[in-house]
Image 1 (tube, rainbow, N blue to C red):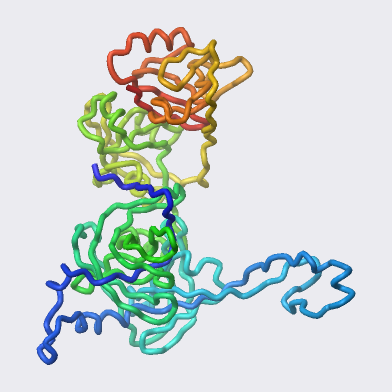
Image 2: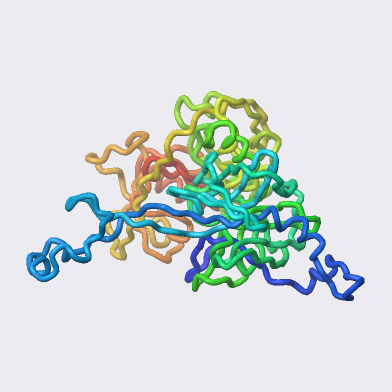
Length: 478
């Protein structure tokens, strides 16, 4: 299974947009200009660059409080001088106008629709579009979706040029791509590169991500710009970079067109994305879980918990099932199922395929309105001291009976993890202090004695059902 998430200690995600550097392998895609005898992409760019626009945004922000504003000493010397006229009263903070720039792509010339990033126009008071030919227009915000960082604008101007959106599922690593945008606000710039990877995601849990990665030199101001293939079709919208310094280092990301299309359809219809849910908590399948569950591969999303009276429960799903398809689309990991369900409009019915005890099952499931996202409280504290009364079942972890004064969700059966040493085998497996082990190898654990008995019979990896705050997760321990 392709690993989608990645981590770099010193790097950080920066929402900016893309400019790509020309790769030597891209020369085969270029044509020779007979008049000059040089390789060039100029004919294609003459047709496509008018579809990429510059975006100027003005917004009102609260200025930092002046700590000397009410000081009698400074009032005696300066009076009202230097006090901003934008402050409505002494009790209200000063307001200032902030200006920023970005890029956009015209995807429907007839209707004047322009794609850009949500972070480009977030909290905008005024959005001004500047075309390549110099014409300007104030844009109307059709709708915006923070979850995917996609926004849709509309302008009313004649003789616009748009680009065709391709099926991003057909994109392959190594495809030649062209980026166009308003780098650093200096004006339209064009660069090129290749697709470096597909299906990338960051660790932002509140985002829906399936990024196209490119070796683009991405810089500020290109957010919302176009990523085109060698035919001039829109592959994605440049969005972010992974950078230590804030400048480009060849790792850039674009939202793929298929995700954009799903968002855009709902923005046009409702002005927002009406996401659905099926009522499961999910997790990726680690190599240890694959071995403990006797799975043939790590493909799929493991169901950790099924919400009571949810569509998933009504459809017959249970904790421990592995979802491998949703609405005909293969599911490789938890990001895939989150994206697939999130873009099904609530109220619709979908098909879902899952594995249970090695057997494949397919059923229909209703998609209901997704509530506001909540973050499960997880205590990740660790302590290097150990309670001698606890049972050291695994290296670095201690267990004990659940104290009578604790009333955990799901009842009082199970054992409480009292300590986990950072860097230990138990820590690396994913166990944390205050987790509650409910079952081992799908057999319920009533108390510490039952836990000891199950562990003493260990003949391979242990498959633990763990209660963590309000969530249930599965962890395999060798």
